[in-house]
Amino acid sequence: MVDGEHYPPVISDALGALSDQGHEVVRAVMVGGREKLPDTGTLDLAGVDVAAGDDPAALLFEAIAALGPDAVVDLSDEPVLDYRKRHLLAAVSLGLGVPYRGADFEFTPPPRPRLAALPTLAVIGTGKRTGKTAVAGFAARTLKRAGMAPVVVAMGRGGPSEPEVLRGDEIELEPSYLLELADAGKHAASDYIEDALLARVPTIGCRRCGGGLAGGVENSNVAQGVETANELGGGICLLEGSGSAIPPLHSDATLLVVPAGIPHEYLTGYFGPYRLLLSGLVVVTMCEEPFTSSSRVSSLTSSIRDTWAAVNGGWAGRAEIEVVRTVFRPSPTRSVEGATVCVATTAPTAAGDSIRRHLEGEHGCEVVGISHSLSDRGQLK
Image (cartoon, rainbow, N blue to C red; front, side):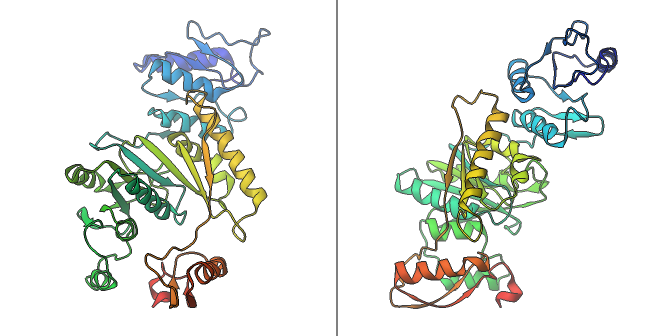
């Protein structure tokens, strides 16, 4: 990546230094700037092919797709590349599996080997409390109704030390069973247990520790979990992410869950564009007051589509990414009509009124209490 704010002989010397180190420079991508360029406005780098145009991200996408380089080296700087533009270019590079490095940094694509024997769908998010597990459970139920026999592999910060199979399709997960898990010191609210309980499909619980800027994990047993899924069989494997961490293996399709109240910069800046580049569908959750406004949801949707288009460089084979906007409502697994109920949830306090109205109006029960402290053990107790 080069610019016109550097004097061309300086860039040529830098490329020569790369050659002296044993590298082969196969193309330079012009990212902007004209101050140091000759009157022709073109950059001549003594035999190195230079790609120039109005969209550096698209040029980089094309160069990587055509040439398959081992790395992208950034020789540009402020003011041509500000922080957002530089992260955008790095996102394109990582999304295509190529490291991106500069004077004092290096970003490497998280390893995503092909391990699953089944077709795979990853459900990832921009962070914690986005609604990934709810969306993954919905996807599992939908695929089950379609006869596709899904198996869910979920990873979490509180998952088991060895991958653990829960046959949600065979056993009835009564409260007594969950209490036994809790009394045994296990994380009885782990995502794979919720998936088994609410989707009634086989699930495999895994764990992970650490999360990188691009969703990589420092340590996990997900690979062993996927091996177990291969042995179980089935029709499709759902890989559920954890926080902003991405399952550390290849997925055939990826669904990104984004909360409507997210700061736009978290999605359009940093490595939000990388997550968008991986994804074929975005589900925007909690699209209602008091979490956000309709105008802000519209603005977020436009930002998602614009950023996705920027990192895809026109190579995706379709005009734009699909964005689905939704809200959450509790759905009892059995009839609660005429019952008095207490609701325990991780939903924020502001969601209490809509939860109460929905349960009482749609399911005929009386809500006598709501706790929003399901993730706070001391407060919940």
